[in-house]
Image (cartoon, rainbow, N blue to C red; front, side, top):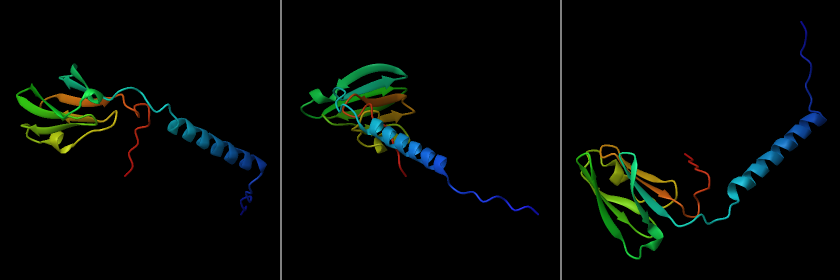
Length: 134
């Protein structure tokens, strides 16, 4: 029976490990470095896949409620300078209401039965990574 040769680290292994570490650091710098400001935060309301309204949140001085109706369902949406939230809906599952307030670019509220989507664009972190842990 042959015994397997013993493997020992050599200089090439250290070189590869160093290159992987340098690449990881470079990727981390590129992901977390940014210019910080990508414009004003805007809520984009889409009904049945078509954009129907854009609400510039930074221009709001007081909470503003708007109503959207489609497919027999009505959503009451409150916009503030920092967020958008569906406060009431007559859809059966109430997922849009349970989503709560959205405050960052890329977040969205979806009412599937009403086919209404509210998504935030712009703001300071629109080019940042979308990271979910847990």
